[in-house]
Amino acid sequence: MSRKRLIILTPAIAAVFLLAVILPLSSSPKPEPAAAAADSVAAVCLNDMLDDTLSAYPELDGMDGRIERFMKLWEIKGASLAIMRNDSLVYAKGYGYADEEKGEKMTSGHILRMASVSKLITAAGIMVLQERGQLSLQDTVFGEHGILNDSLFTAAIREKAKFGITVEQLLRHQGGFTNSRGDPMFSTRDIIRQFGLDGAPDHETLVRCVLSRPLGYKPGTWQKYSNFGYLLLSMIIEKTSGTDYETFIQENVLHPAGCYDMHLAGNYYEDRFPNEVRYYMHAGSELCEEYNMSGRLVERCYGANDIHALSGAGAWCGSPAELGRFVASIDGRAEIPDILSAESIAAMTEYFDSETYSLGWNDTKPDGEWTRTGTLGGTSALVKYFPDGECWIMITNTSTWKGPGFTRNTEALFRTCRELYSSSLPACDLFNPSSYCSM
Image (cartoon, rainbow, N blue to C red; front, top):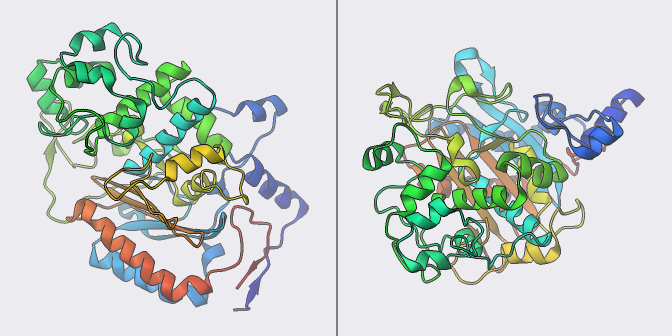
């Protein structure tokens, strides 16, 4: 293979590629952006334009082999990897199967549940609202002057400390909520039994039930990872914007970032999007009772939990390539315009100490290394932004028995591959496929 690759485009195809960069839009049904509607411009989604052959370099065969051996070791059916350098997408490729039963290979254009990586998207939505003056991170959440000042929430509160919970405390997992009675986002059956509900609670009912329970600590004095806190942030976005969470995020966060093929995932295989993968549990995983008390036994990844109801805490699905585009839009680099101000990005990535969660990110270090992880039944996701400007993103469609601990193994894979193959990554930009790709 030659050391340089030129993607040759006819004028018509070049125009399509240009639209893909400026206004990407998925072929699956979704709201059309206002600007595109005004100009009557039909755009093309990045996922529709990517082709794994664009990342097929013999010089990187060794890296592919390492990833494939890693997948075999952990019995992963399929994985998708995207690598970004200085806001340029230099590598995007699928490995294994998107749907083994159908013989469908994983590609860079498939979308996958990203689990708690969703929290980074939700945090960006909160920062957008703050920049518009519609809320402040210091605003309280409950009570007469809180954002969620609904009477049914106020009536459920018996502890004064709950009236002091702020938006920032929810972002940093400091709201006082713990999982001493199980994570409320993943213990729906217990909540139905405890509160005598007729079925799975909607968000308002769930919040009312959880607010009737005592806090685990005084808000702001400690931190405990809380999916429930990010559900509250999703509801804050809805209340403040007057728009449902998914629509607001798509139109005000993802579309401006150039991401048009991200959606809140469904609960079952039948609910998947046209280019969404099939999810798999690890060997030995047992069937579970369906989340809604139907009595049916289901796979944990398809019905044991109400994935869609996770909302901004963990329900988004998308491709690593588009996720990279989103990260490029909130990283403070000049190559791709950011959707947030420099002040908001600095706040999201500010380092306090090793014990304090960043805003949306799991962890940010003083040297500029940022981490965001996600784990659900049937998927594992890792976003690793390195100080030298590289960002590696991998999402799998298979659980492992190690659960969240699997992240450490993926991080080790990233670091090994960076050490051995980073210098061989192409100097191209798959966000703009009309460019030269040179090795």
